[in-house]
Structure formats: C-alpha cells, structure tokens
Image 1 (spheres, rainbow, N blue to C red):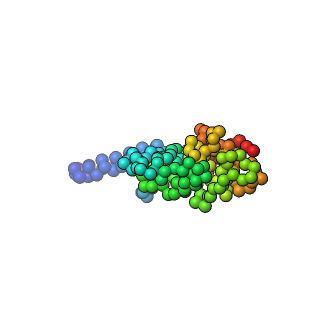
Image 2 (image 1 turned 180 degrees about the horizontal axis):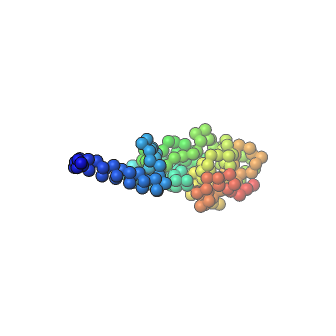
Image 3 (image 1 turned 90 degrees about the vertical axis):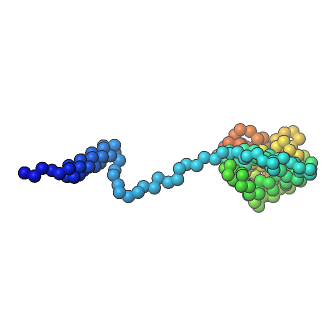
Length: 203
C-alpha cells in the first residue's frame, strides 16, 4: 500500500479547514456567498461648527452678525461679516434675509450647514392696522419650508429687525390675517414642523 505523501496530507488538512469554516458560517446564520456585498458608505457625521478665521473679525464699515442655518435637524447660529447693519427695521430685515438666501460658503458647507429659506421670498413693512414693527412676507410664515421660519425668527431676533417688545412680528401677504409674534425658543429651533403652529396672534 502506498503511503500518503506530505503534499496529499497538507491538501487534506486544508480541505478539512474549509469545510469547518463553512460550517461555522452556516451556524451563525450567515449565508456564504461568492458575490461581493456593498454595505454602502459609512455614515457621515457633521460638526455643525465653522472654524474661526481672520475673516471673522469685522473691519471698518462692517459688522458681525449671527445668521441661523440648518444643521443636524436644528437651527444653529453662524457668524458672518456684513456691511454695517442698518438701524431701520425693514432695511435690516432685508439685509439679513439676503444672508439667509445666499449659498453657505465652503466652511459652512463642510460644517454641515444649509439654508431652507426660499430664494424668492421678499419682505415688506406693516400693512394698515398692523402693530408697529410688523414685517410681512410674500409667503405666509406657516407655509414656509421646514426650519425656514425658525431661521428667519432667530436671525431677526435681537437685531434692528426684531420687535421692540421682544421676538419678531411676522405676517404673510394677506393683510386680513393678523400677524403673529414669534420667539426663538427651543421648540422652534429643534422641531421641523414647529413653524406651522408657532407664534401668537397680535392685532
């Protein structure tokens, strides 16, 4: 009888290991496959922060303002340098609205920030019978995209665009519907649907 050679013995051991490996995989409930499985890209995380730079320091004739952008399902402040903010309420509101409508810069995009304020949104002063300080848009605030109302309210509040009594008084194009007073509270900043029901009616 012929004795098994060393090569034959080695081949037998390799085959036994393969069988054991396949048995272990089957025992774990994992189906063996020869087709590569694409598990997709790893989940990405955003920092919701913009690095400080020399550009964050205002120069003569300019001012630093905080605009609220959307990041990780909430609105958060981002510092920007603008021309000196007007003291007139409507002029200040229009300047800040333009900031919210502008495309986030590279640093903001890298931090995960975006804006949901529509590019076609425009703003005007109070209609007849509105309280002083009212700002009216060409779209009703409660019909704006998710977080857009929060961006506007939180960006306007605390600036010349805000109401003297606190918060921001906003309305839509229909002057038969009273404007509402909004405040930049936690619910508005963190709930995408909060803009549809936020605010209290004023007349």
